[in-house]
Image (tube, rainbow, N blue to C red; front, side, top):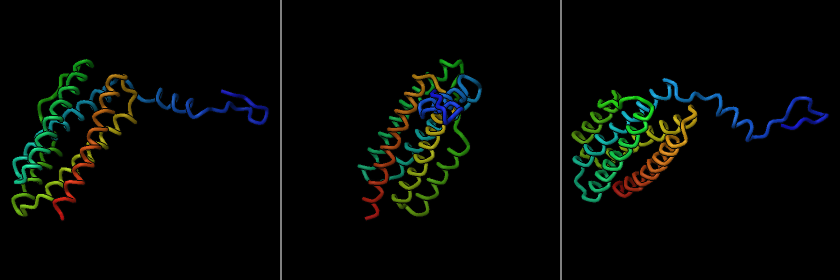
Length: 174
């Protein structure tokens, strides 16, 4: 920090401000464990959602994309489970209520409309929620570097999948 005659208070650089903000975020406390558990549950929900969506579409290209995303989320789930275990937390095996509701809604959309674009929009909605969850984890907690790296990488992949979903939706709307 610099002191100047005109500014009797120390001037903080953006880096110093970011460092202080990071230090104020919780680390390995219960809130971090709970949030990682929530991310793990949401990832399990995504696996089930993508599998269900793949079963519901008729286009082979869509089936392949959705099945591939389910497999990718399976890898994500295993990574998050490993991180939870490193924090002495046993990963849960159940789905979240929002995840179950989302899959039920997807079933209703497909049953009553048969509209694959509507189904893709529901997948997009789930991915947008996942990106928000990842962003919140990164901004709200001071995570160990290996966990933060995993979450950043997974978030970036989910963003890319969201972009691809939007492109696919435009293709099917045409």
